[in-house]
Length: 371
Image (cartoon, rainbow, N blue to C red):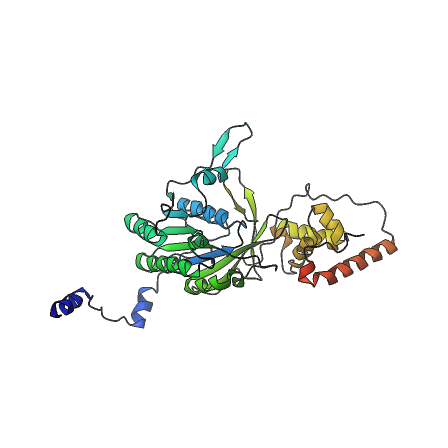
């Protein structure tokens, strides 16, 4: 028994002297918070990015990984490091063939070209059946890494709910972040919300994961469009900047370089980043006096999508900040003025449509299809 007690005593690490709060403040007084993806994710933080499957989480995450290894922002107005960082992208979703297919394109001359990622970007995954947390821990301890991105936390689930397994991995990633000063981004699938903006409630029981993250943000889209909206739901490092009332807008697009990701419109970061499509709908509705039905047919969208985009416009948004393609959106003005009876009929139609939109169950239907 005495030998057991002696061994236990030997194995226990002697506690260090406790720190004073004032000493902590002095030590970090001159240290600035380094932003990795503007106010959404900072150095040394564990961040969660959630959204519906197929919404573009992986595209954005790989786009961020590539930019961080090159030391340049994905768009000028977003604050990101100006020095290259070493990134490990752990892809638990795609196999190698699927990954190559995503970043391979056929050029105009018929030649097949692949995107050239930075040499600082590591792309790997644990062997099938291996413990993901242990594999990542070994990778971090054996390689000089600044950032780890895990895509997707939902894959580690062993049960229908999977919260226990996902929480185990998340806590290990949090520990690595604290011990090694690692910056971690974790992707998580959510369920469709049926509302304009995805909230943490769509994670269901997995919402508990957000309690252990330093930052949480979501990417959402609008049906039938390539529009994406990014909103931060939690931040331990300060006040949220990209909020429900100040969304970061982007579009899914394949760039000339071959990288598939999000293109962000030039905008004043102190105001809402306003996509040209919202401005165009605002113009067609207010200046050209077009009905929601006509706008929907003209832009090849549903009327519910047009109405939602129109409702996103705010009076303090500066239209000059967004470049519009005048040729693509050119509208031929009809000669002569509309008959007053026809205008009144259109207004009645829109009023009726607005009433229908109050019922969320009717959003996917066209209330005027019978006419």
